[in-house]
Length: 179
Image 1 (cartoon, rainbow, N blue to C red):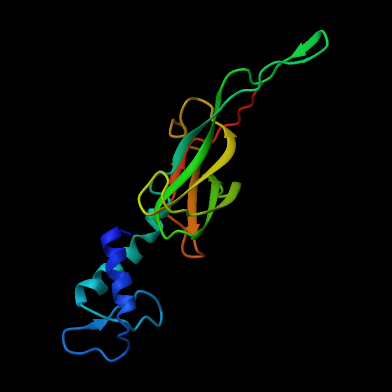
Image 2: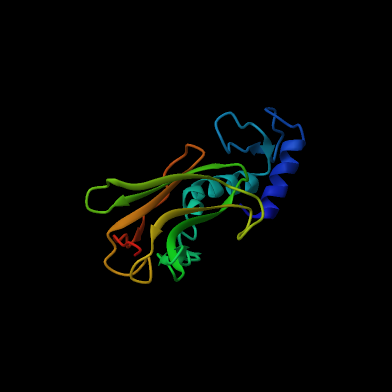
């Protein structure tokens, strides 16, 4: 939600005007039982915001998370090493959420909708985006350079606060391991 709209909504909520709307005012109806009296443009804005809420959940969906590799491990004269260089994992990020919103994230296989990975996050204020945002790392090693490189074998969906699932965002979800 735009910060100016959020400020206006806070002001409306603080006004104390409920139920008995005078001429020129309407019920906001942002949620069931919302009988806050507002100007018609405020109700229109609330409807528009609610209609686009699911898309905001996965506004920027895939990202790369950089991880430093583990260096060599030595025990006496014997050394071994794994993940010497840095590697990247697939992450999911979303913006324009109310801070504190609980977000459920799923990666599903495109061919049969089977859940391949799922996780949860909580939207925080500040950070890397406008309004509240969340960021979750799937731990899945990123293979082939991009989560948007063909073939796109899966998709990401996100749901905030128990609402509707976001639109599907197609991604590449490949098996890859570190040695």
